[in-house]
Image 1 (cartoon, one colour):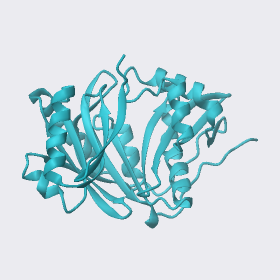
Image 2 (cartoon, one colour):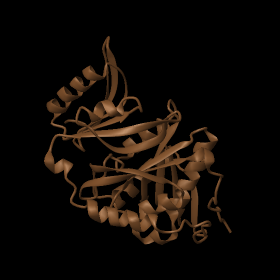
Image 3 (cartoon, one colour):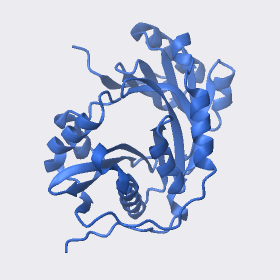
Image 4 (cartoon, helix red, strand yellow):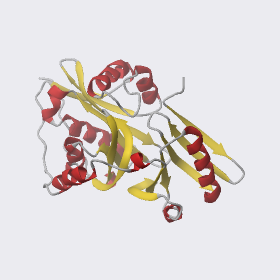
Length: 295
């Protein structure tokens, strides 16, 4: 049985590329590269045809994004500070017209404009005392997997698999959770890249009956504070463009919208567009942390 994804490093005398072959989402992603760009693009074309990928995503340095532009790639988003303070340009190419076409783009624009027109709140109130926030451990893997399985019918990565969650934690992924009556009701993670000093804030999930207290924002703040402590200042997230709540949360926390990835991944019940939000944590003071009320 073919895995949902695999990473692959191809090294020759003229180029080196690190790839993420995402079979579940039918896409090929270039995470790291160096060397002859013409030969790299030839290699990507061959792999795309071999696996029938319908989207290619290339995380590109500033000196190369215009090279890809001349080869038919499009600029969809920018992550500021991605490479130890240097920006990354997310370039994409499509191999299928349905993958290239978004049915919800105008609706997503309207949602985004509504969010951007709102004033950012200065303070946040704490949720009721029955909610407690903490850092997750390996012992939480099963409960985390169950939480993601309940919240998402379909998800881009196998977060409903406890072994996969355990593997991610062992590899250094940070998870923070909220408990209510000894049950995990909300969680979020930070996928940290120690080489380039950036982190993707992701895997945000809250059970429906607990969504009115802003738990995700509290978790994101906790993650941000730990990232800053560890010298990680580039934080970004890729949020469902149709989700008012998630996009509003990142906006309210001071993130900047920097682009949208068309039909980027399967989530909930279909391929969805994803908004990119970026924040430089070095300019952010340690903000309103949720009090762990035990009385």
